[in-house]
Length: 242
Image 1 (cartoon, rainbow, N blue to C red):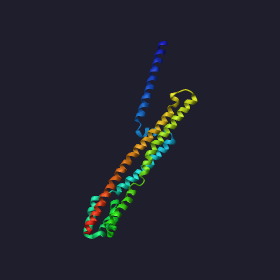
Image 2 (cartoon, rainbow, N blue to C red):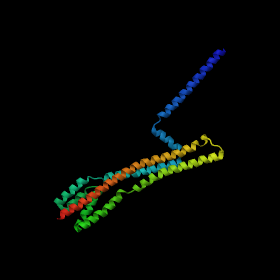
Image 3 (cartoon, rainbow, N blue to C red):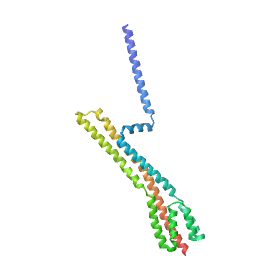
Image 4 (tube, rainbow, N blue to C red):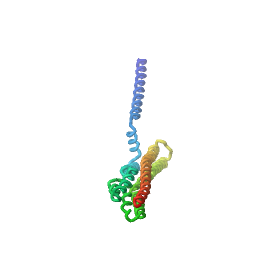
């Protein structure tokens, strides 16, 4: 009987060990099967609503500004070479009014600058050039509108993350001072929250920085087209008046 009881006990321990190992394996598989979005959501919740909510707000507002600017800049992009050829042909065939009509029917800052220069061409080349330069500055301001807000969010997001980290570390040291001894389990939660705020702040800044660089490159490209087109317009008006 003793041998049978011992055998049953060993078998029971083996079954329990196998069940525990299986449960641990299932838990690991479940955690591994979680998608990136689910893991990101859980980490975000662990970071706490105070600073994480503000960092998320920076991301939402920054993306809103970035998307609006990208749409505006894409709509502002025109085929400058084609427009210059159309204006030149209109000047040769129908004069200034025909060229102005071409500009009215074309969207974008380059067409608007052409129209302003053509509208002042009757007052002389110098007046047309001044109008082109002045209106070019106005169009550049329209292109760069709200971009400063995007750079603000890029700067604020990681700073908020660092602030959350500092506050979390302060809370951890306050617990150590209150208890009187250093325990990893005592301060691990506060340190984890502190580090998560920094991570998410940096992620937001990196995402917005990519959009910011794209927008700046797009603005530079349009501005270069505007400057080149302005010179071409003055040359066309000078040739037309001869």
